[in-house]
Length: 382
Image (cartoon, rainbow, N blue to C red; front, side, top):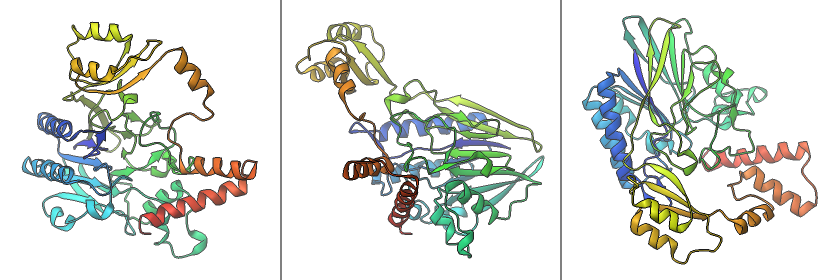
């Protein structure tokens, strides 16, 4: 049985105000070509299908196109919602699509849905576990003392509520932040609540393959058959050196698994070029990648007037211009807090310290985290 493991498509995403729908259509067509060449048996899509909970018409049309092409080529599809997706919107018409072998799980509903497929080695059960918070599973736990308080316990509880036969070969799709995963500094998958959303990989013990979504870089988790496939495109300049591709998983007899990646080549690469303004313009003459999405870092000590406009005359897709000089380095050193996006827990901690003249103690931190998690659950209508 050969699965293609995809995830974090983020359809409808914009990058520095540039609409990426053309790039996404291009890469989905490249994925379809690779799936046919590699003769995949089915396709796993591990969440964050859309970039926003309310996707635009271009994004929904692109997903419709992709699923139709997969179906036309005969690929069964197993797809879950991620934290960027609206569970209800993603799973719209899922009963009808299920009859076309496109299986979608938008929200945990008391146990994980699963589907059994067969090959020469017997049956394989594919389990779908969409993005999960403790509040999502607690509604199915009767006793108050048994309710879960953290993400690892939530995953374990969801699995325990499901009739998994570990004597068989089992594959699970899950969209969570697994402890020990590498996260890019600028990635949208940064921790939300001061680390409380982390999940121990031990929560998935017993599964033959764990198809993970949420982290944007391809990576294997510890010594488990647990992989993040990564995004099919580079979605931040911190990912510019990542190798993007389609992940393939071959399951033979139980315990015999092979995993490999087939590289994807984007319509526009993403990279950084650095030098003085004159050096950048001079090097552009011999640069074959003039249409790449670029971050330009100028080393001139004095700011160049209208630099972006002139640079875009030779590099149309300059998305970001920054300076690396003595003045900028001094400014960064003097900043009290760096300019990365802060988690809600970090923001509240700074607010508390400013208002009270001290840091929160352990009890106050625990209460704050619980309240923030409760607010997240309420935002999701729970």
